[in-house]
Image (cartoon, rainbow, N blue to C red):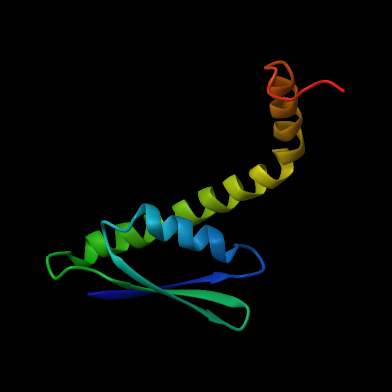
Length: 99
C-alpha cells in the first residue's frame, strides 16, 4: 500500500519533514522529493498494513512534521540563550584560562 502527503515548503522545513519521517521509519518507508514549493512524501507500507492503519499513520506523520518544525524553530530562537548559559557554565570550570 502507498500514500502521498504534500507539505507546503513555505510553512514546513525540509529538515522537519525528514526528522518526522525518521521518527516513524519503523512504520513505513518514505521517499521525499521537492516539487516547486512543496515537499512531497511518498510512503510505502508493508502489505500487512490495512487502509485504516495507513490513514492513521499518515495523520501521525502530519502531526509529527508540525512537532519537528516547531522544535527546529524553537532551537533557532533559543540558541543565543543556550550558548550564553553554556559559556557561563564552562567559564567556571577552569577549562578556559583567565587572561
